[in-house]
Amino acid sequence: MLRLKTNSRNEQRSDMKPRAKTWQISFSLCVLALCNCSHYVTPPEPAIESVDYAGIERIVYSRHVQPIFNQKCSSQACHNSRDRAAGLELTSWRSLIRGSDYGAVLISGSAEESHLIEHLNEESKPRMPLGRDPLPQSVIDFLSRWIDEGARNDAGERPYENLQKKIYVANQGDDLVSVISSEHHLVTRLLPVGASPTLDVPHNICVDHQKKFLYAALTSAGEVWKFDVAADSLVGRGRAGNSPAHVVVTADGAKAYVTNWEVLNQRGLVQVLDAAALRKTGEIEVGIAPHGLNFSHDGKLLYVACYVSDVISIVRVQDDQESERVLLAPDVRPGQSLKYQPVQVVLTPDDRFAYVSCAKTDEVRVLDTAANEIVAAVRVGKEPFQLQVAPDGEFVYVANRGSNNVSVIRVADNQVTATIESGAFANPHGVAFSADGRFAYITNENVNGRYNAHHPGEQGGAPGNLQVIDTATLQVVKTIEVEASPTGVVCVER
Image (cartoon, rainbow, N blue to C red; front, side):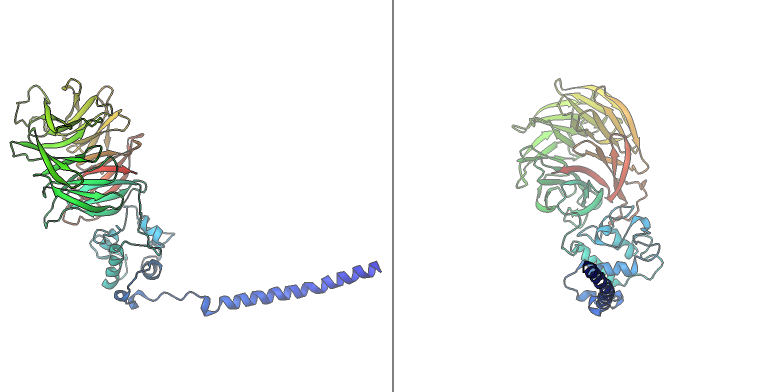
């Protein structure tokens, strides 16, 4: 009986196998049938020529923008995931905002300055799409609108929102401040600075110690503008004398000091502003044509480089009075002197020494702050402009505007230990460091067109660039193209 039972079970199992196989086949056919239903098939994208772009109220990236790139920009040897011409891939929002080999292709909120639109409009060569009919103007206008509205993705996010590490660059030839992600080395925003029909010339910028506000000195407009760092939005503006060049803010954020770089005025002035309201509260008489200035790290003294009197004026912050004028050399004639032409002054972290760039004599002079006397003169490149002490206090980087290079001075013995060269250096002007000192950032005005910019300037000036130097290797590791005549530069890490 046991044996018969076993055979019966085997027979039952044998009988079940073909039934199970039949059920699986039937299920698979059902799935295939469902997949072939029109309800589950993604409809083909309508040809962009047939779309009424003017009638689209709310732009959804995947529905309205990506189809344009799919149909016109992702064919063979173009900007698809395999070919990536010029390093640019246009298969998704994320790949688009990564940009190309030349940097960002769009600037959120600024279609006019976005390279994508420049190429579509043939303001930049070559015209895109390459080798195909140009896009209808209605499509280009629609893409411009999408960028001006923030270049948002489907979730409504703007590219590179809420950056914690940024570099600001003042472009005095375009009245714009570039906002650069220091993590991605891409321009992410452009802040308009100035309100007149002519250039207002944002020459130099600074950020307060609280990292809340950015201040820009507008040389031609005679104003200082103030921006919220978190939102990159304008929050105030105020008068700041004539020809404001540099601006710095006290550690408590209460007062701003602005130099008036009037080379033809026999009276040198530093304006004192209430930093909150940007209202003038006083002025300090210093040497003629004050340009660069910096606080001692203890905040008690303000050192001012006076371009047309060859002196460093030292101001007491407590009562806003000039306490002393230090001649840059014994042969300086008191009053008016143009032998050295000091541009900027910076102090070591211990406030023991101040370094002064002298544009006329191609040197950096070293001031002993205890004795208030010059103790060294260091030969650098031609026409040194801005300079900065590295965060660790060991080296000073000097931008040599006339020789297109950067000198590195060792603080311990005041020797030039390196001269950094790059084909993209073109009238170096400003210097800044990342907080950890890993990178040095050098602005290049490119006033003589030495740098062959990939994209045109907006107001006729040649675009400049920001050079990123690895301080460990002293090599340029990135060239970031910005707007015309970049000068001031500052880093923010929140």
